Image (cartoon, rainbow, N blue to C red; front, side):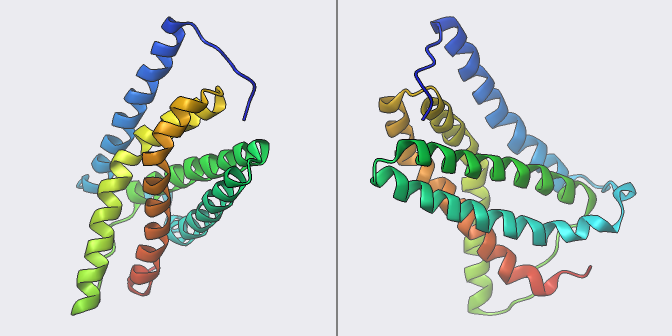
Length: 184
């Protein structure tokens, strides 16, 4: 973790407002991109590689999250902070890639049948719901950790970490389940 970076109450309020704004704006932007009637086809066919890249990014983020947990259990705070920063950066890269893909490509339909279809949709729906709300606690957890506000960090992480890990892991599982149905 970083050395204590104390902010005035006014500065802290601005940061919190930014976190809230970003936590609302990004899921709304993603929803618009998913449901917009016309996709941005000018980007070309290269975007069809992005789901595969996203699965790799999500896998690496999942590993970073687990390693970060191991480091904090061992009280290796510097390593924990570095590992969580890696997970945070991977999450940001994933988000940009995800937005580009869904802005340019039609969604792929799952072709499985029977019980596996129910499993897929359960994982997908819980993944989407938790991904939509995950940014809020993740940003606060990262901010509190970065500014060395450990008590606040611990309180938020109780919610942020399991949501973030679930979203990251289920993202990979959903990808593996739907990948046989990608057309490009």
